[in-house]
Amino acid sequence: MPEIISSTLSYFAFPFVRYALICGVLLSLCSALLGTSLVLKRFSFIGDGLSHVAFGALAIATVLRVFNNLIIVLPVTILCAVLLLRLGRSVRIKGDAAIAIISVTALAAGYLLLNLFPVSANVSGDVCSSLFGSTRIISLSLTDTLLSVGITLVTVLFFIFFYNRIFAVTFDENFAASAGIKAGAVNVAMSMIIAVVIVLAMNLVGSLLISALVVFPALSAMRVYKSFKSVTICAIILSAACYVTGFLISIAADTPVGATVVIIQALVFVIFMAVGRLRKA
Image (cartoon, rainbow, N blue to C red):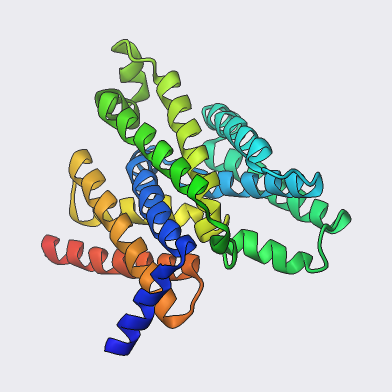
């Protein structure tokens, strides 16, 4: 056991490992903070949808050989986040259907582009890395860390200053609108912030696993707590704890970070579900 601990700690001599831990904790916090509201609004799959959009945009940036892919990925993902919100409120296309339409189209288009215009000899490996985040984590830099700090500050300040508006919009948009709250503006702001969080988190867990960061902590907290504030606080703690635990296990066991974190979150969900049932018994 001491050898495993010392071996794991030795990895922190590498800057990208420290950056990955910091970025992961911060982005997990942001995902959980917004995830509670998104889950309650039945928009839990927006993380999955936007992650597929981000993958499609990343494929475009890769084919065009854009050095900084955020120039393309961020605007496209933010635009689709707003579009998903608009379509989700449509009578003809409900939220889950809108997410399915955009996400599947973006995922297919991205994979098709990478095959039609390959930029490397191992297209399958590149796609796997983008989808599951298996190797992209080693490319994290100080810039990524600073971006994560920035979006975390924006997310926390947004949640603190607009807490009452977010609470009202989450549970009853019509009541919020009748009370003078600009529900549309709150929804757009939340969509834009979660889009940025998802783009930054792609390097950590990959585009297919990002929705777990948004959904699992909130669902786990809801098994035990009932108030909005308690669920949000619990989700934040769980999200950060699960990431740190999964990150350390992945280093010690040499497993993919994203998949390990998601499995930890799934196990925690099962535990909290059992605790919730015991409390009701």
